[in-house]
Length: 315
Image (cartoon, rainbow, N blue to C red):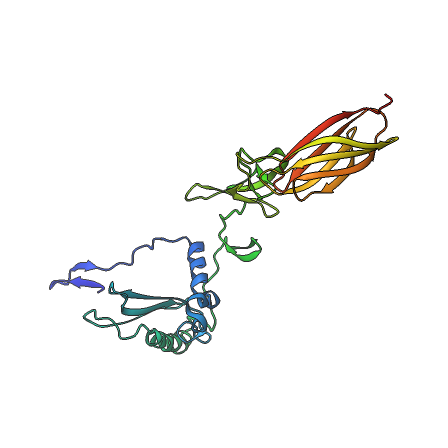
């Protein structure tokens, strides 16, 4: 209705085209259109049907959205398909007038109606009028940019900053579990690393991205404060001049043993793999009085050490 006049030809009411009000940012609208027109992405839900009639109209770019209403018991009451192009928006609905469930939830009927109408109205109406050209897409607004984020190229709005909310922070990890260190993580198992901290803009919750397979979301679950550390004591056996037999008596703790290291005067003279409790010996050159130290390490990087002072018999 354009206007209403009375018997005196006076205008009582007249329709006026109001100044349009923008309700969606053009970049947001463009990105939504990109999503709704992506047949490949639609395959997650529709499989090969995503490239079928209704969704894909020959030479006509469309953005599409399906929908249905169910009756609360899992039965579909209707089926619809909305799509739009730069020239026209189309909606097709199918259902019973009294709300009875459909006998089938197949959407091929609405897709076929939408397909045939959309193809015809573009090629027979809008194209002859010069209002549309084959494969014409919606205009790309200023600000939309192509970026590679996390190894994938996509479109992003002008205000997107992939470094926003990201800071570098140091966290201490456990080398064994590759998770965050706890109070009971031994010093030998600790490693401090730079991690990327991001803050979710909605929940404000922090998230951490750590390198080299480390997990910043979980705590060390290998070490316990009640763990028993390995132990070792050192004795000296036979000697022949400055060649001395060094004996390490090793006792395993909570975790399996890994390696035994022998030092003379602070210098490493032997490194022996060990599989359990027992005595392990090696012969080393010991010149004069020296401190002999044995250190045993287990697979959780707990260590135990024992030392003794060695003096040649003629000292």
